[in-house]
Length: 97
Image (cartoon, rainbow, N blue to C red; front, side, top):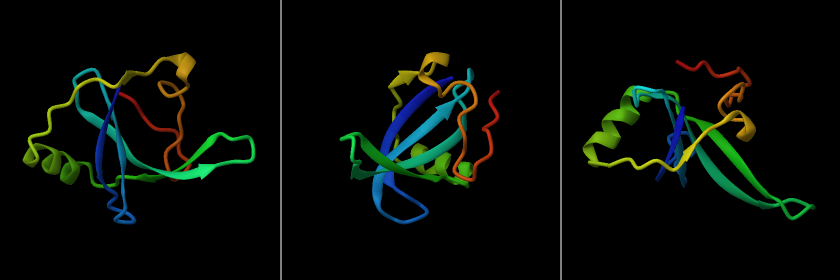
């Protein structure tokens, strides 16, 4: 699984954020969420709010219309905790494939 990041407005709250696109081996978007920075917690660690992008077909069309060229940002691995068992915005474990 690869993770790509693109700046965009969140479809849920219409605030600019960083869209994280989770791609399968074929380069297809399997899950997407927009990340919003919320500040630092008491331990000085950054806190983020995530909004799941529900309509992946519209997202793909938007990205194609912008002629966005993806470049790899990160390759998820088990040690990063995102390749296996990360939870979606609604609490379900995301399906990969």
